[in-house]
Amino acid sequence: MRARRRLMAESTSSTRLAPLCLLALAGLFSFTGCAGLGEDFSATRLATPYRQSHLMGSNTLDVLALTESPEYQFAPEAIDMQLLSQSDRMVALSGRSADKLKTWVNLIAFDERRMAAGRKYFFYSDENAANGAIDAVLHLFDRRKGLYFDAQLVLDQAIRTTPYATEEARQIAIVQWLAGRFQQDVRDLTHNEDQSVHADELVTLAGWMMNQTFEGVLTALRRSPGLARDLTDPRGAPFDHISLDQGRIQVVVVNDVVTVKVRVNLPMTP
Image 1 (spheres, rainbow, N blue to C red):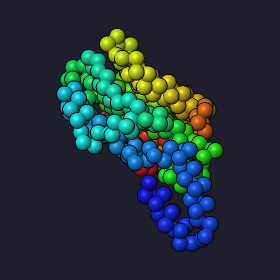
Image 2 (spheres, rainbow, N blue to C red; image 1 turned 180 degrees about the horizontal axis):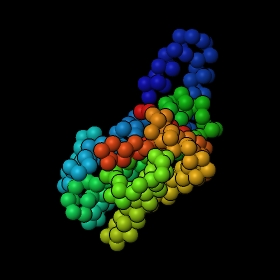
Image 3 (spheres, helix red, strand yellow; image 1 turned 90 degrees about the vertical axis):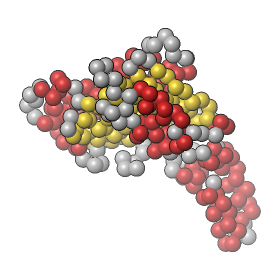
Image 4 (tube, rainbow, N blue to C red; image 1 turned 60 degrees about the vertical axis):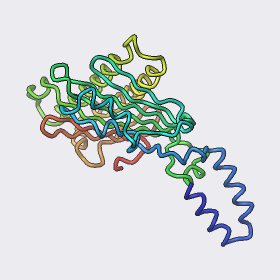
């Protein structure tokens, strides 16, 4: 909303046509839901449970306590739903904005033996990925759906011990494992009979959209295995998404911890 006030001040001082311009812009902002811009629905804020959970450190109680984090509190009128889902080995904190344009899921899975976080995922979908109020006007008739996915996982023992012919082949195997592991975690949580329909809805949506995304990534890697060399690049490796144009994926392994970033219609850097 600061952008709108600044625009009004500049217009008033620059031209006598300002009242007409302001009325037109006000109509556009109203149409695009400017009233919802007061609440911070940035991926950084929505990923608070993901960011504050630590692999092989956080346990179930630690993650559940994050629901009370001040950073993760929202005005009731700004959200359509905010949910907590839990199974024996998983916790999901998810939600959707009141305008239903932004959906997010924080999913943390726990190691069966240590009961500490062994995998964590953050999924964020923005039906209007234009940046800021001005872009919202410029892209009024060209809305771009954005997808944002972060993950950290302890690398599977089988991949660690398997000899691969090339580093590219190992990277592709890691992506295949990641895609399957995420889908299995989604199924394990959503097939829990204790979950609400709404909890299933948001986590299932994340699973469905990421399934499409990983299909695009793996298709690109099968066609051009050499593309796997770009997976560790800060810009990531490009791939075509079946319905959302082009995306990028970065996969980095350090000390047997896999860190993944996927962006579609959103910048790879924060």
